[in-house]
Amino acid sequence: MTNNAAYSRLNPHMAGVRRVDYAALQDRIDAGYLMLGWADPFFPDPCLPEHVIAAAKATLDEGGAHYSLPIGSPQLRRTIAGKLARVNGMSIDPDRELIVTPGSDTGLWQAMQVVISPGDEVLNPVPSYPSNVRNVELMGGVNVPVPLDAERDFALDLDALRQRITPSSKLIVLTQPNNPTGTVHDRATLEALAKIVIDHDLLVVVDQAFEDVIYDGREFVTFATLPGMRERTITVFSLSKGMAMSGFRIGYTVAAPEIMAIMHGTAVNILGAANTAAQAAAVAALQAPSFVDGYRRTFAARRKLATEIFANVPGVRFSAPQAGLMLWLDTSSLGNSRDVADHIAQKARIIVHPGENFGGIGSGYIRIMLSALRDDIAFADALRRTADCLGSFDPQN
Image (cartoon, rainbow, N blue to C red; front, side, top):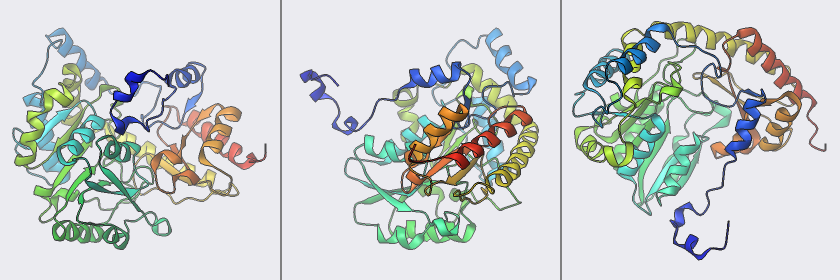
């Protein structure tokens, strides 16, 4: 960065932010590199059913070039409330306990900003979605990593969490299911966590972006439905993953009325209004969601294929994900995650996500998405090419 004195006036919490070379990434995409790193289902191929696309088009034809309410259209909020009752076991007031956001990233930012003041300690089970760590730092909070238990499929280590609680602790940020590990925290663990939350007067932000894809009939628990957690939990949801609507940028957040009042009051300042046509598409998707069943079958088949392929790669360890669209590979015996990812990009023209971005022990892992490409044969070929690169990786060259 230049030595211009004006830069000394920047927010000091931004000092550690590194430039991301998005131009170079776009060059690789334009050159035909395959993206197995993005959590963008079926990228770059068409995937959405016609009724979702038609709803967006019809809204544009009928005046959808205008703002909706900053908190989301009444129709979408009512539709989401129906989904929450049906899927999550939550009965909410769509006018007082819900806000529509331009994607779950902005929802996570707003949820944390409502809680975090400079100096507050935030307990962050890691590895975790990078923004859940970075947001804390940018807000002047103190990030307190809590290592997940790698020996138990990255289960939440409640003893490790208790040991890190101090009088300055205010918030826990939980990904459920976990991104990047695909772990689903079970009911007994979450009930024990709820007791800790009450005993220490904490709040919880839950990133629930991958809730739509759960494997092997495993029970999925929405943390806010546990006794005493409704008033202490802000839950952030997404339509980008399970519904493959990443480009529409629609998410939503649920919280108790006292918390949501602040979120409504800051909607214009932090969020703006979500895209009007995208909201109409979200209504259509949520009202007729059966297409998601096909996506689930695709992801389950790819999970099975990926575990078979990578089980034969020397030096690579993993557990089959319990949920989500990703495979979290332990490549620590091969080398640093960025070196491994660079090798795959150079040799196979495939981009995976270096684990170091996810915090904790991530520097020894890479994340591979099971959702890229619409064609299953092309996807299988990409997996095999990635596995071949891992099998031939030599950290000395």
